Amino acid sequence: MTIGGMPTDDLPETFHVTTDEQLRAVSNLTRHRIMAVLRFEPATITQIAERVGLAKGSSSYHVRLLERAGLVKVVRTRKVRGVTERYYAMAARAIVLPDPGEGGPDVLMRHAVADLEAAPVDGERHVRMAHLRLTEEQFAELGARLEALADEYRELSDPSLPDASLVFALFHPASREQAEGDAK
Image (cartoon, rainbow, N blue to C red; front, side, top):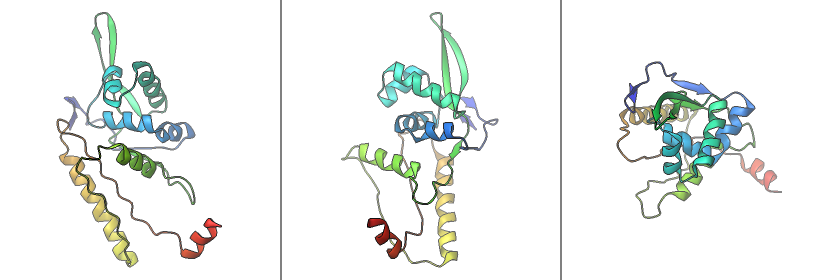
């Protein structure tokens, strides 16, 4: 596999976020958007700044924090008019976050909602919420099918095409008693 013409055979499949520094790095919406830019192909600070809509200085700051946390890395350098240009890429194909714990914020869902709210209103969207009643076996099967479908389409992704985001959450909601207790 290659990313932007660069081999990624040595790229780990997953990077597990385990430290507070790494969690702080991925918890920031701007850095989440920078990682989205780097998901399919390496980019320079200038390219990242243009795609995310940041000043180069801000882009550089956020990329340095991601690099320090081990989430992105320099994959190529080249000299341009006497200046060394660095190309950054993700450190792994997928980033795995720890479970937020009971009552804790789910960083992925917060970023997904922010990205959805920032998406063009007139663009095509497929957003749906369904309340289901499933056996534990059906629940596990649906979760596995959703993950397999996401993996299948991730493998089909072509960096030359526009970005599309897929987010899903399959979970058992809090019981009514628990939800009512939280509301008091």
